[in-house]
Image (cartoon, rainbow, N blue to C red):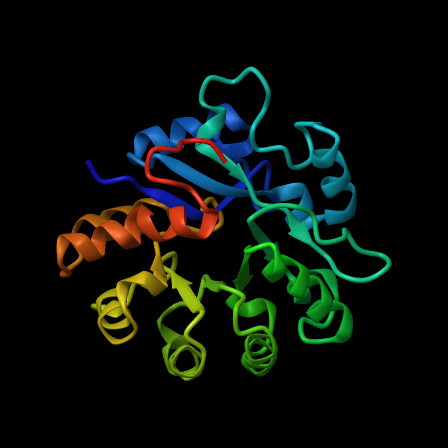
Length: 251
């Protein structure tokens, strides 16, 4: 049976309204509803408010600011905590996670500046990868980051069909740049990317609850691609990014 892993999810209350995934049980219920086995989740507190305090809380085991795997929860293994990292002396440090998120526009740092490159280099050195929102950094900065750190997997999330030309420019130049499916709703956009660049560079993601989760999940079941390619997009690529063996089910 196909494993589905959402690499682009938010846990916690968001500024734009009440959402079912305001807490871990609510998010688990949403995953059940859509037949998603697992989610890589950033905490809303880190994404929208203060990643430094959220990072500190998660490092000490607190569940309120970023621990997406609350102790004692039967379904805790279904949520993979993705820390939001900020470089420099006022930042979070590089942490220890295999998958991290960088938000340079939201948290006011230069993605390809000295501190940004140093932090990303530490993530690359431990075999980790980066989630990076399309609107969070100019394509030129993504290019500089990928050129300086060619071994670093970068997953560009929330790209959308209007970004395909710039996205193609980056993916042609950098084989370690991938993309999630959250807002790739254009006709056969996912298929085009998978056929041109390989299914190993496309990962299932929803961006929920900011963007719709049912649409990308429905799209996944209807992709006009070989079953083996769909399996990679649905969850196989996420397992590789997280460093999970096929039989493992915990981060």
